[in-house]
Image (cartoon, rainbow, N blue to C red; front, side, top):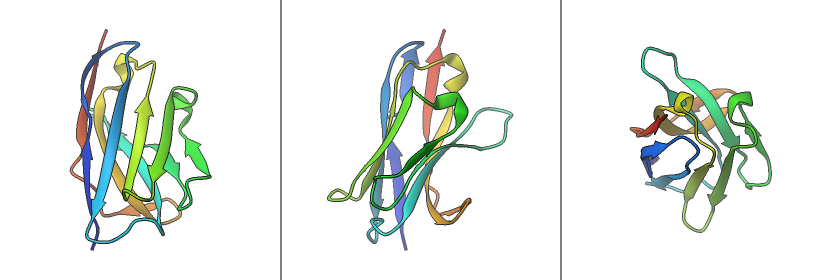
Length: 118
């Protein structure tokens, strides 16, 4: 069983940066593709970014391309999301998950709140 714990959220002004972490425990996530999603108030959860098991292949949702960078540290069993040039519309709860198969995710973390003020 994998437990995922996100951290690094907070309140930041527009144009600022945050780095989210997703630390795994219980077993290694090094064999899994991993993903970040977000859910804003009143909206459905949406895909943000994903990284493959090796860390060499990444993909991003269009709204965050060029501003967010996903990475992983296999020695620390952790996935990161570097968020730059933040916008108020990035405000959401950000959660990480294991991609069990294409576009199907599990072992969700509890999420971390990101609030971007204008």
